[in-house]
Length: 87
Image (cartoon, rainbow, N blue to C red):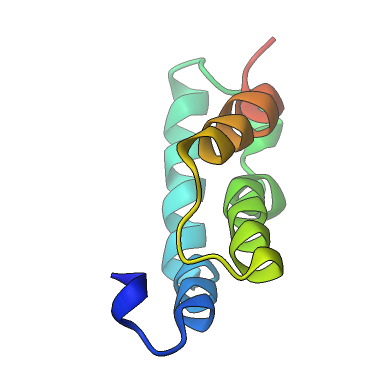
């Protein structure tokens, strides 16, 4: 989809920064806390969006239209899950 857009980085930024995305992640984290899968402190706007912020950084700083699966796995496995996971 992004390849068809004239300004893919801007479209990505707009999608990743949307209030809807932030609210959705906060809701998901709240549910994970309720299930005992995430620590209560994870339900915070900065924590909720850190993975999206890192992904946006990859797109914008490297001028990419796609990101390797390895980068996504690294963001999730090495940064996001350790940050939110209950000890």
